[in-house]
Length: 638
Image 1 (tube, rainbow, N blue to C red):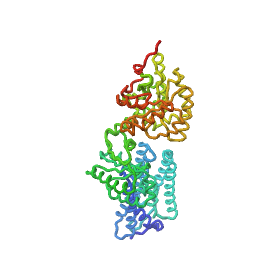
Image 2: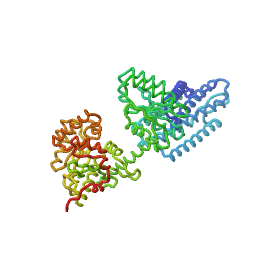
Image 3: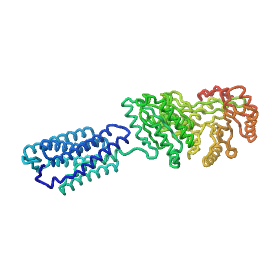
Image 4: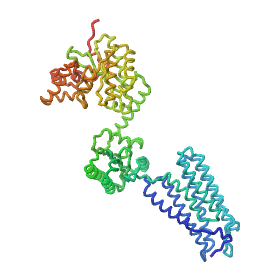
């Protein structure tokens, strides 16, 4: 057994190192089970834990060897050097780890790495020389241990100063909570070392090195699993997809959107039990993600699931049988996979959103190349719409005015038309309303388009009149969103006056609103504009919601019967009676009746027999550029 010349400094208890060894093992297991992506960041923290475990283990062995008999001094020297060098690597690795969260420049990171390597080398050589020349730690010929000076204390002080300097210098690059967390845990670590020194102890050195590691695990590697569903937060999906694409590991995504799923999980213990069972049975090799909008996404790596299609079919069937049918939870299920057609990894969830918005409830859909193409087309259209809106140019060349002539049965001529909107974009050519109107309404950009189409229609009417063609009016469609603008009426007046045409040459087409506030606002705006001579059409009568009391309260001039009413009227005598009764009723109340969707002579005769005043449809003309409308109009006598 070896004796010490400074007994107080050899008062070592292994409890600190044993705690560190146990915590390193526990945290390694927990991290391995809870971390989704085994990326560089994950591997770095695992390496730090391994190094810390090794440092604590070698310290326990080193202290045990000191009190062992028949152990050669060289063995003690080796374990002491290995322990101290390993220990000094921990703060150096900690500094290197902070490179990403603190956005430390690569040049600075390399500089710190080189400085750390130099310091460790110099101190280690100095310590070895102390053993040889007996001015530091050494064991003499009488087996007495001498501890005159420990050069690693200088290295510890340097590393702590470097850590505090880095955290403080780059504090603006992380949120305040992260900064104070990193700073606080390192202050505690330094205080433990100081207090240990004051009491001539060396038992808690490793644990003081371990505290900063606990800090970064807690802040940067927290458990991402949702306790209620067992799923991972959706924000981690991008990391997995990035990793899969980089490693050329094709991955399938199964998305299930469930209506009021979170609420149902909170209220039904049976649903929780069934859902957990569903997950245990079906989610074995993939990762389940949970998004805030009631969607879960399961990723299935193809390489580890060769028969993934069968797996997906089983999951979908199990879900329908055990979740949908038992608990009446509506769903939309979408399957997609990593593809070189998808430009950005962030687009995967956006494509799922895009497809989902076009699906009916309780449907299943597999994303195709056509879906991906449509998504990027819509994105391009959206960017063009944003540019059109930002420029606010009422003559924007990308917005085209088409029109469909309307046949007047009373005059047996074409003297009115409906203005229709098209977009002409560089990358897509002509874009039809069914593709861009929903986008414009979703992102609240429809109003600018409405004003552009009104301005161009007024300009076309001005040209028609100046060339002595007879035109009663052209109608322009406006949405309920347009009506809500306080400036709606003033904008219409300004545009009509700017183009120097009579007010009665413009008609406004609007659809009825269910909302009481919107209805009152619509009635107010209609009345205000009708005083100028502008006529109003009730568009799409017969589709969806129709309230006769409200229709009577708004002084519409023309009621447009949707083609669906025409189709309905030819099914049987009862349907014909119903539609013709509506038409007769409006006629007796001094409304003009317009049937749209007239495609042939039979449709025309049918509408004439139902007291129609105006007819519109492919029988007379498909939508044409408004410049061609003159081909349908009569010239007035000069």
